[in-house]
Image (cartoon, rainbow, N blue to C red; front, top):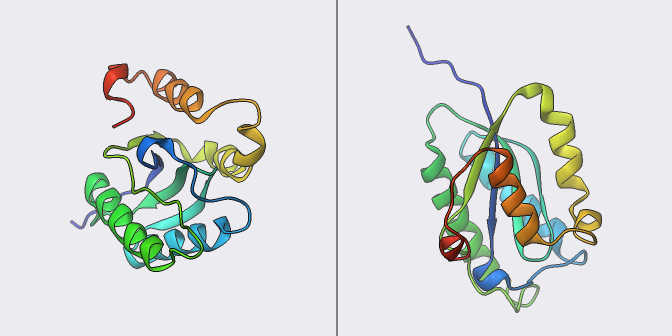
Length: 150
């Protein structure tokens, strides 16, 4: 018997101190680079997005990848790339220590892609902090607020 998996994740992580470092003028390059990292890891990037200080990845995680390994490699590669492209991203402070990963049924995929696609509009109403806590609450994840923003 071989291994079969099909796991849909939304992964969310922010910049250190939630510092804003990208905008509409340079976000496409960052999102495309991160999608390329996913493909190189044999993970399918359905949507990469975010708004100024955080990233949302809607991916299908490949059977050879652990979630923590994938996120660690993604953040490391993106960090190096952002530093190499510091002219475009002069305010990049590094990534926060942690991340969150949420699993979804594939019936939610269109809604997830739309949600990530519209992050700029979404964050005119809701802050990243409010959004993040709502995601944790929606998924029943216990957390201590003093450790949320490391």
